[in-house]
Amino acid sequence: METIELDSSPSLPGLYARALSLSLLPGKGTDLPDKQVVLRGAPLEADHVAAYARVCGFGVRDTVPGTFPHVIAFPLQMRLMTDRSFPFSVLGLVHIANRIEVLEPIATGSRLDFRVWTENLRSHPRGRQFEMRSEATRDGAAVWSGTSTYLRRGDDGEERGSSTEEAGDDAGHELETSAVWRVPGDVGRRYAGVSGDRNPIHMHALSARAFGFPAAIAHGMWTKARCLAAFEGRIPETYVIQVRFRAPLRIPTRARFASKRRERGWAFVLESPDAEHTHVTGDILRPG
Image 1 (cartoon, rainbow, N blue to C red):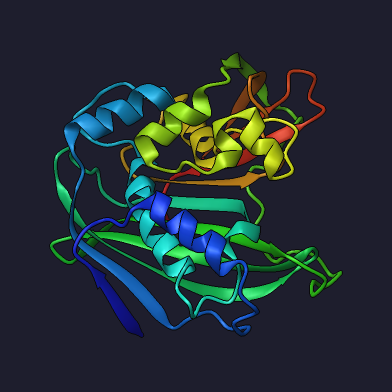
Image 2 (cartoon, rainbow, N blue to C red; image 1 turned 180 degrees about the vertical axis):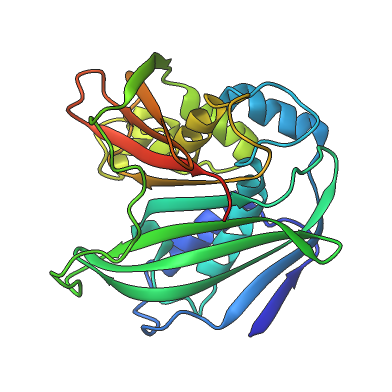
């Protein structure tokens, strides 16, 4: 596997501009690149972690929220997905699922080595899907891992169904409502401020309409983080949290959060108050 080693985290605005220019080029093949992007000694700065915690609903502690390392890994993912060897346009990809495993508590202020790579390109009923894998290590030992599953829409899917593992498919069934959240219209801009992900579909209704959305939508990883924050004090220090992103969460809005304890952890769902639209389904599980 070829390694692209970075000295610092790449600029997301620059990568989105590159993605736009690459979307105008003809197809670049059909296989995922045999490459990885590496960033060593990435800092998990206390001010950054605290700002992220405020936006996503976490309390401020001496360890980082389990979803926070994704913020560090995402620019590396974008660097790989905007490489000329990558077969798909980033602008046409849909983040349909995400799995994070917290292998050890990660102290705020620590430095971690990150690497990202792609694998498992396969059929989906609406096109093709693949996994963007991320791993964070400390002194050579893995402390965190993430898997983002992306869909590339197209007519090359197969009717037999998706091979993506379903998570939290109890939506609307036996889960107990914990809260109805008011999700403000500026949450996309606020999350962009702590994540660097200023995709226009999240920033404002006008910019979202330019990309075919009737309103701005919340970042999928904000919704996942907000759901995880609802379990603070109820889950162990190491765990797996996996979600499926079902339908965009248009903002501003209200959303109903429901959950229920399971044998190995918790199942949860985030949906519209009338339960007509399911936005996120997921599980939090003990490792193993």
